[in-house]
Image 1: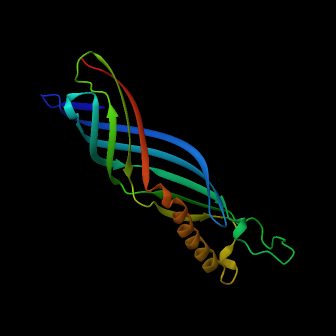
Image 2: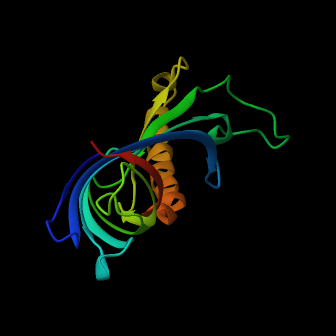
Image 3: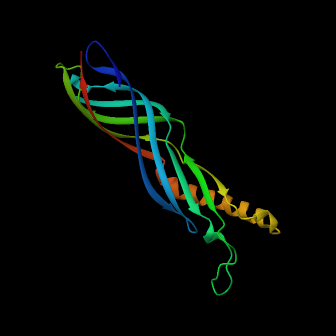
Length: 188
């Protein structure tokens, strides 16, 4: 983190970078996806310390490199006979990514002011950034000769397009991403 102070101690400007990854699942009506999320951000923040104390309000914006990689087997999309028997061998997988806006605003509330004296300082802040509704891009990995079935490629393309829309609806709740930060700083 790079931080510059206003001489009266009432504010500062800082540049932050953070990253975290985690795994999970997300499901639509027809497919269950394994998901790997990589949350990576870099922000330019303006800190304001009302009354010159340790409490601060931070606003700014920056780069959002958050990406969710998804994978799901396509077998649930395959037609079955009336006895629920599989009519086709395994179809392969739907694979893709979901991404929010690359440029995002951020608002944080925090406690801690590294310019109040002392070499070591502890800071804590909470807030969020707004990334908008994530956009999903899916493709198919398969060894199955879908193009040899009359209308097969068109049906698969339509099913994948529908899955993209369904997955985007599932991810609509992730337009605002929470931020929690604990920092230990040392001043030279």
